[in-house]
Image (cartoon, rainbow, N blue to C red; front, top):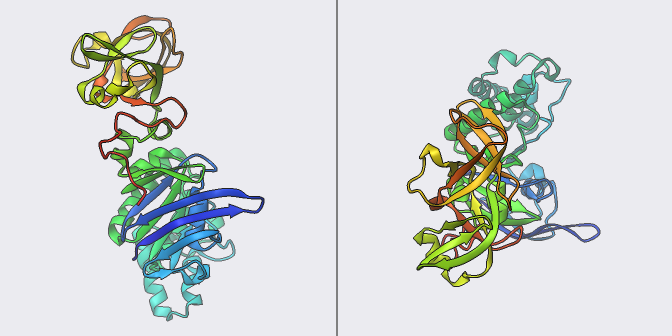
Length: 380
């Protein structure tokens, strides 16, 4: 096990395409860190630079006490699990798992012990004599993980390993990977585009876009205290609602004027945005912070918008209700399924203002609700 440190790392492809821009990231020993972001954000490129499969254009990559920029992949003492499993089809499961150990010249007895122990951990002992073509997707994924485990590397690198599995298997394998990490305590870097996967797996989540780290922190910190509008909209499902409007002062209070109604900002937010009165801003509201006023879910009787229901999506105990105001046409609320709501209904919608965020305009507008409070997460 070891720390992994990337300092001022840059990756530029031929033609001047900059995939990674001055990335600094410190992954602690035994930590499980997830890189998440939309396609093309640079997360897989970052992982491949740690593995040695991509050259670093500038900066340093350090694994343990060694700077490994010029160290070949086979000598970096890391094990990578790919999206497509990369198993040898002509070899049995046992031989797939044992192959790297044989190349290292380990004794047959030690190889056997490691393979059997890893197979037992993963529940694939009865599959050792089979070939990959005779396995399901979930079984092949376990074999790929087992092949990494037997190497006892300093770090595990996972590149979207669950994306080829169906929804049920993805959930099962997420739980298995989390259990394995608790057992092995091996430093792990995991890449995914699935923010739910990132939130459930990571000790820390690194949110990336356009080769830059926008926020790095514990999952609940990133979810509850997003540093900008991009992070707020990317992390969370359904995503955060964004209402455009203006900050106004009235009777000693500060309000967000949505265009069809005014919402009173709580003191903690008002104190931080008081100097922005009169400016155009964006109010960020999570779907679970909206509820029909008659449900009495949130305290108080103010902070209500008049909305029309456009779509109801049942989800079992919960349902997603899409509504619109005269100014905003796509607002989603997550409410209890026992609410009698139907398409076309008009009703007052209560906003839980204790949970809102205020952003500057723009796709990456800064969360001014947090500015100056030390809440911005570091990528270190």
